[in-house]
Length: 84
Image (cartoon, rainbow, N blue to C red; front, side, top):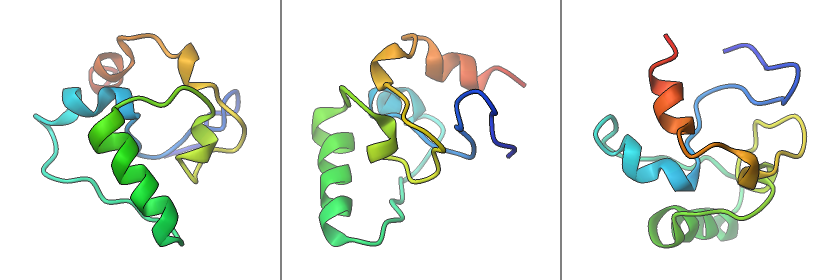
């Protein structure tokens, strides 16, 4: 998937806030990270907290810049799955 020149966001990813929405589409989530500590943090954020109040760049390795997760519209996941 090409990189978005405005945000640096590209590729498949799911925000913690959208995890319940995607349950009907996915069987499991795989975290690809180089450290066990980060993987355990991601599991907690996605499974227990289901929210991230800050920079998505700390969760997603494929971002090209800092992106404040609090700026996303609540309909983000639905819009993403219906954008064609």
